[in-house]
Image 1 (tube, rainbow, N blue to C red):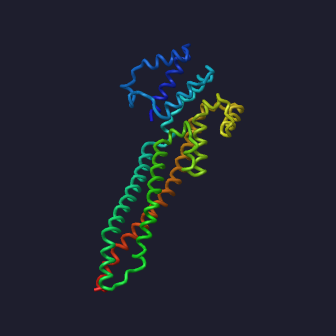
Image 2: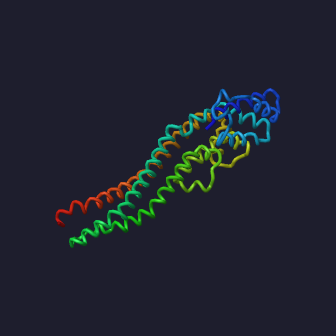
Image 3: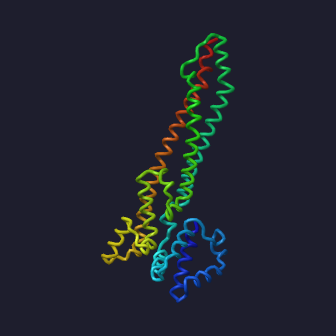
Amino acid sequence: MSWALFHFHCRYLHKQLEQGATKQQALDTLRQLDLSELFNNNAQLSGAPKQLLQRLLTLPDHNRLLTALSAYNQLDINSVTVNAVTESKYLRSINYMVILTVMYLLIATLFKWYVLPSFVDMYSMFGGQLSAKFLAFDSVYMLSLIAAPFMILFCYLLRRQIINIEQSFVQRQRRERWLFSENLNRQLDSFSTLLLSPVLTAENSTQATMKKLAKLRSAGIDVDTELPALLSEKGQSLTVQLEKYLGRCFRIIEISLYVLIGYLISVMYEPIFNMGALI
């Protein structure tokens, strides 16, 4: 995400507006700047930073816009959001589980259609009796065929949520809430409200978090100065909750996969181990 560029835009626009330029004049001079050698991503805002800046620029009141820009000048959003290393760790775990699921399905399918019939014919020819665990493989395989696509779909949706998590800080979609736990959703909502508080204040927000910030302001506290510390504290809590939730999801999926893989291995080798008694 281009948060460094976002903060530069805020500082530049704030300076121009302080010097008497109109909003449009400040934007025009900003667009004329060549920042390609100074910032990555071709010096273009995208994703959450772009949406937040657009939301800032819709503020109709000049003084509120200056105040909001000044508040974001003091923030380092990169330092309080989920960092790239943590995000990469989550994505690697998800990719691992998807690969493991696909490999299980591939091996189980090969075993069912090419190996299992040979064992059944051989035991039938020698008059042997296959165990109930071996004969139950067809049912387990069918259940895994039903469950595996849902596991892969869940991993895909989880992966997309992690990649776009900063997007949800600026604009949360109702359809995205079902994937996370209630506690994690509360943490995300609270962090999002704090991050957007310079804008939401101007919009006379009635959210609970904003009411608490309003009380601090009425007590003489400079909330804009305190905002970096508040966001840092809330960002740490959010990261902890996210790790707990993802850890539970990963454990459930991993245990399910390990049980299926263990069962497949035992079924594959059981006829071989019992072959001596059969002959």
